[in-house]
Length: 304
Image (cartoon, rainbow, N blue to C red; front, top):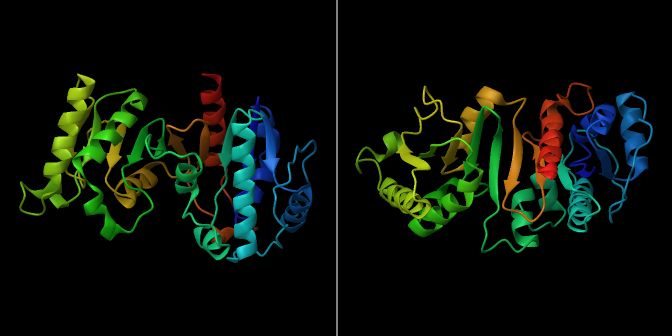
């Protein structure tokens, strides 16, 4: 089975993870690396490791950037985006069964003039996902968190919570909830405390009720008090109203092993659940657990 892999930002830890795990990944699938071999050779030299044998590299449509560890550059941003597009297109064309993305740097994308803040937003637009939402989910087999809003400013979250849009989100997410109930978090402290601390929970309650009615069973419960929702509930699935609300508990508990999934796409895409880690770039300190889990998940879903 062929799996396309985009390299992320070449100034971060992505190339270290890719090179050091080629042998292990090759036992799971045939990786198609969306990168020039010359860039991998340069990275291997800087890491003082041997270049793996039998690499299948597909050159993206971009100029090879100079490797500048821990530096934010438009060149690395442009190349990481081109690598991402290459992996996506290989999968859309059926030349790969799935694709896995290594971490990009959002500022580097911005400097390169890329009009998206991240992979998920790019996928929504490129794949015309306006009617059927592309849902960002992060987690491990022990805990999954779906993000109702993801990469938007915190001040924009409250007005984004509308009955119809949240109901639609819950209905799109429901088929992936294999263990019910799924907890839906409130927005405000104490889930609003009966309206004393905010009214958004009234909207969330209506959306939950309407989604459960449409599903004809209780898939979703809530709104749960956010600061205690993960304590002693023994739930496997949650829906968070905003990015950090869901990811702080997840990464505190399962940071190394968790992965990123984008659901409802016409292709299978998984990703690592961490950033470029510039603080340890090219120091041979990167942890590969999330990458390995992301590849395993992509292969598992491709076989279903």
